[in-house]
Length: 418
Ligand code: CTP
Figure 1: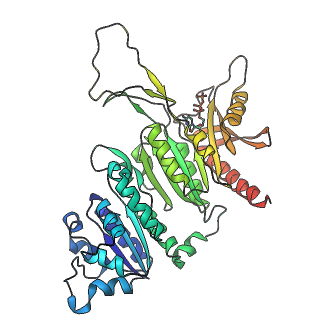
Figure 2: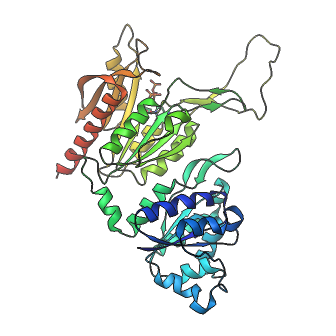
Figure 3: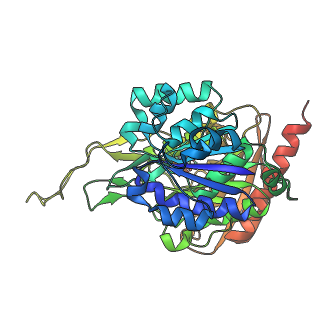
């Protein structure tokens, strides 16, 4: 396939190098058309070496071959990654003042835009309106990932991982190499699964936080099991040790977040793409009413009173917003007491949260956090009745396999229901 890769001027321009490599591995010929600003971030020789084709930015380059029209006309797919707020605005307005914008204006191929910018720019009404215009015109816009941005800030606006961009673009172009890869065997092939992992943290000041002991191992094991079952996996990782995120199999893209509200934004974004959502993250239910900009000092008084405010319940929000057929899985780590067993509390939580499946973990003996072995029961519902599945004992990988099997069965049930 003849693919044009437009690169706009943002710090994420370096990720375009991986997009080129991936496209070429899949047999595409790649013509890179950077903006002049993009070349401030990555030099033309890098793009030329990786693509094997000359690189130009200006409509007056290679005038004899009428480049500004020819490239767009010959393209079978146009991807812009990263797309800045500026280039998005130009495309929305139909401006063609450089080779990339002229190419977009002349092409009849599918156009895929992968935005990357600061959260404020992404939320700006001008950008929101421009994105809506692009989508109305049939341009495919990939939602930006949520996570660390160029500075110390984080939020939606991060360029998604190169594999995600390429998969999204190939699906948009209905490319056979994509269909071939997703039609692999596996009960979840062709499915998109979003999984939260780890534990959210709420900042008290720049160095302290309220958090929990979740390591993220269970969520990562789930992501691997889902990918092995053929799913495209979006892993939303809350404060997971970076060592655990290295070397994940292909098919898993990672968005890193810290707080509950960031988790909510990331999962809500994933929900627009997901066939199934699995909330294995341990979520901070409260956050400090105020976060101090500088490190808090001892006051000299005996105690310290913190005022906390309640965080949103992410799982309940996902259940409320779900599309028909979308499967939602919750987790519950419970302890029993003199009046109720841990299982009683889990059943009660299952009813309250309204998920399709609840993975119940008895943590009375402090067995779960940070260890490799675990014991769970997968609860499902038959009308109002909560059904407790048999106990699964084993490694987090074993448990994940059972959860993914249960999700696959749930899809079969949903699809066989008239
Ligand atoms: N959860 C969530 N948002 C929250 C709290 C929990 O999405 N604010 C999700 C968790 O990811 C998990 C399920 O809800 O899938 C149960 O989490 P748990 O902490 O056991 O539930 P809570 O609602 O916090 O219940 P409790 O009052 O027992 O703390």
